[in-house]
Amino acid sequence: MTEFELPPKYITAANDLRSDTFTTPTAEMMQAALEASIGDAVYGEDVDTVRLEQTVARMAGKEAGLFCVSGTLSNQIAIRTHLMQPPYSILCDYRAHVYTHEAAGLAILSQAMVVPVVPSNGDYLTLEDIKSHYVPDDGDIHGAPTRLISLENTLHGIVYPLEELVRIKAWCMENGLKLHCDGARIWNAAAQSGVPLKQYGEIFDSISICLSKSMGAPIGSVLVGNLKFVKKATHFRKQQGGGIRQSGMMARMALVNINNDWKSQLLYSHSLAHELAEYCEAKGIPLESPADTNFVFINLKAARMDPDVLVKKGLKYNVKLMGGRVSFHYQVTRDTLEKVKLAISEAFDYAKEHPFDCNGPTQIYRSESTEVDVDGNAIREIKTYKY
Ligand SMILES: Cc1ncc(COP(=O)(O)O)c(C=O)c1O
Ligand SMILES: C[C@@H](O)[C@H](N)C(=O)O
Image 1 (cartoon, rainbow, N blue to C red):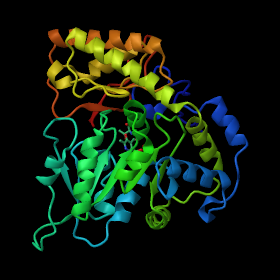
Image 2 (image 1 turned 180 degrees about the horizontal axis):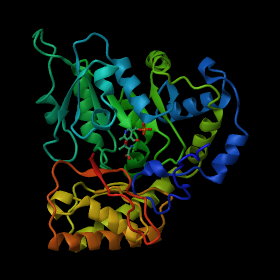
Image 3 (image 1 turned 120 degrees about the horizontal axis):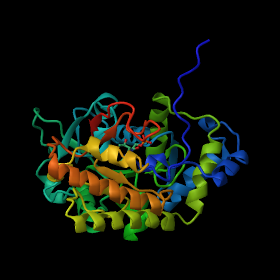
């Protein structure tokens, strides 16, 4: 029988700046899994799964929570649950994950039109941006009225200003629109801004709260909202094949960092990002977004920098990169920060001699960007996927 072709064994995320999704489970999490409850969570009989759902819901000031295997599932069933009578549309930032990276779930599961909006300030949607792009439900049979606004906090690492969220919420209430938050990094927003999750919970009708990014859990998100919403979302979760049986092990692993000092962990990762942003600015390396939290977005277009060169320079220093987005998390070491500074500086200097014309928004995806030979040279030609 032929040997399986297995990927190289993943050892550590200490040098992995491709995404905070690469955080690895800790020994404490593994131990917690051994002691987890073993009930069938589809029947609501798994103690640790219910404990996780109620813990996160309570932190967000919501009546109920639903453990989902991914942030994508959590977002998509949340939005579907809010929507009732098509034709309808959803308004979001043109960079929003629910629009750019969830495989057209909005079109397929929700059968919704999407109005992607470029923020006039370049960073986050304001109420004025929303007002000038939403589709009113005024009886005009040509349109698909906006029923839901989906915001992301943080988006590209940018912390949404609380006062803007409050303005948007008030307008949504006046106009009968629902407000969802893709909270894949809402822990980062809360840690950096000092705004408690509960205050975000007062603003959003639903929040998809990821556990598997900066919070370091192996999988999952908890979708929070009122009881009626979560009951219906449970229905859509089952429909989408997201009913999980003995999920207690995963729930207990997620609870470890929730019960630890997660704010300090996240603020450590933010401090690394802030230091890299300062380094780039001192070097004249342009950034695409303010580095509020754990991401540094290099403006490849302005820098005329080839993302493939940047990734290869990263490999030279044994640092994993995917392109213009440099993603910190609590398992990244300071040694990695020093090495990525060298990689970026060399890629920037190379760009001065060999300018590269990037097209489109920041490209962060790679396919084989971390496969290298013994000399650290990329084994296969590195490709770039638009983010
Ligand atoms: C902003 C954002 N939302 C949602 C998701 C989806 O989460 P998952 O990968 O668990 O589906 C991601 C990436 O993982 C993300 O970056
Ligand atoms: C891009 C997205 O799917 C992934 N969550 C990331 O941030 O790396």
